[in-house]
Every structure is written in structure tokens, then in C-alpha cells.
Length: 305
Ligand code: NAD
Image (cartoon, rainbow, N blue to C red; front, top):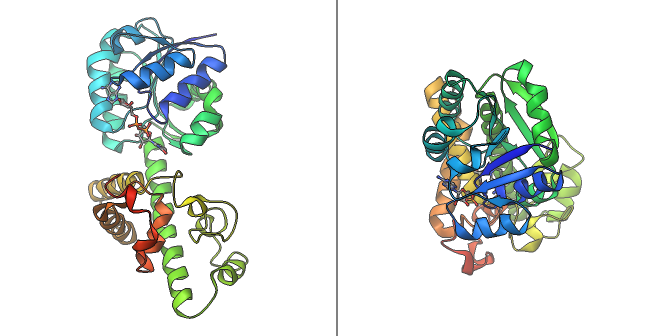
């Protein structure tokens, strides 16, 4: 049993903290949101009054916060000044590579072990303990990080040094955003050409166009295995979060001098979709934009992103 501090108990962190409790760890939880804290309490966490108090006696500190600014602030104000010597600090949020590297360097300078460990998998995987973690940390530290993440994980992969976890996450999600748009465009063209969606699926899923966005997450309702498209594009991975990750990829590309024209186009498409009010829909719902059939999306979620 370890003493774990968990900061950020939202959609993802709530389920992740609960899995730390299920694994037998003592979890001190903190969030700015009272509802999130009440849920964590219900899952067996001890509620701390401040982030500083949550981390004070922890052997492992895990953060799951919205963006880089939140992570920088929580580390500067609460974690680094108040965590005990020897604590392992792991940030699981999806943030910009520069913030991950900066926080990692500050943690190292203060004498802590640090890993950036963003996740693949949504809220359901967070609750089921089946997330994939992409870890940036010193090679020698990785086994310790892997052990700390195990109660929440299906897989824990070492990506490289500090910041490499975030780099892996945004590169993976750029592939996903671009491939989903390509698949949606192809389904929209197939429709115009009079090719039935299920026939196109059968053929493309056995041909060179095959990819995860077709065979595991088909955007056309009623075609392929169950996916958010079959549930009115509810649940799944929100378009607003895809937009966030594509923005992070573009920022990183600009700083690194990488050419990512398709990533830029994907960001523009998801920005438009969000602007139209569909940020709260699954990212595969962009199919209906390509078809010119936004009327098929539930109007009630407009503005939800
Ligand atoms: P969320 O908004 O539901 O949760 C974030 C929580 O952080 C909130 O409860 C908020 O109150 C809390 N918080 C913000 N500032 C704080 C502070 N200073 N101190 C303490 N608590 C603070 O977001 P989420 O969906 O849980 O996502 C968390 C992270 O995981 C994000 O970086 C997101 O990009 C990433 N992610 C999300 C998903 C998903 O499907 N939701 C999937 C993969 C990765």
C-alpha cells in the first residue's frame, strides 16, 4: 500500500483515483470543484482541504488537470514546495511539450523524480482501469512509474526522456484527427457516388484504406462495430478535446520547425466544427459536416464544446 495524492478529479481523474483506492492505496484527493471532491470521497478517497495538504505525506503525486497553465501553477504553488522528499511526481494531463519539460526540469532541480504520462483512452477506460500511458522520464525511473500507474492501466509505454510522453500523445492524436477526417470525406464521397456506406465499409476495411477510424470507430451510424456514431455521437472522444490536441500539435510543430500541413488542416476543420457548436459531440460526428447534414446532429448539444 502506498500513500497517493491525486489532484484533478474531473471526468478522467475521478475514475483514475477510484482505481488507486481499489488497488489498496490510501488516496488524498484535491480538486477545486466540490462535486468532483464529493465523488472522490464516495469512491474511498480522503478529501484534502488544499493541494498542499494532499501532497504533504504522499509517496506518489498524480495530477490530471485541464491544460499546461494549470499544471505549472499547481506544481509551483503546491506540489514542489510541499511534497515530501523522495516523492514520485507524475503528471497525466495532456499538455504542451514545453510545459511538460519546464515542470520536469523544476521538479528535478527541487530533487524530485518526475514523469509526464498522458493517456490514450477516454472516460470509460479511466473508470475501467484500462488506459494506455505514454511516459516521458529517465529510463532508470520507468519501472517505478510503471508500478505506480499499473492500477489505472492496460499498457504503460516508455516514450523517452521528460516531455516524450506528451510528444507521443500529440503525434498519435494528430494521426487520429487526420485519419478520421479522411475517412469521413471518403464516406461522404461514396454517398455522392451512390455507393452504400456498408458496402464501402466492407471493402475499405479489407483494402489498403483500412485504418482504426474505419474498422474500430466507423463514423457512419449502423456500420461496423458499435461506436459513438450509433449513439447520436454521444460519449467517446469529444471534438473539443480533439481540437485541443490538434492545437497542441500545431504549437509544437511551429516551435520545432516541423511541416505538418495535414495537421494544420485538421485543426482548422475541428475549429470550424467547434465554432458551429458541436464541440460536445464525438469527433467522428464531423462526418455530418462533410455530408452537409449537420441537421442530423442533435441540436441540444450545440454550444457544448
Ligand atoms: P475535466 O475538466 O473533467 O477535469 C479537470 C479537473 O481539474 C476539474 O475537476 C477541475 O476542477 C480540476 N482543476 C482545475 N484546476 C485545478 C487546480 N488548480 N487545482 C485542483 N483541481 C483543478 O477534464 P478531464 O476530461 O478529466 O481531462 C483531464 C486531462 O486529461 C486533460 O488534460 C485532457 O486533455 C486529458 N484527457 C481527457 C480525455 C477525455 O476523454 N476526457 C482523454 C484523454 C486525455
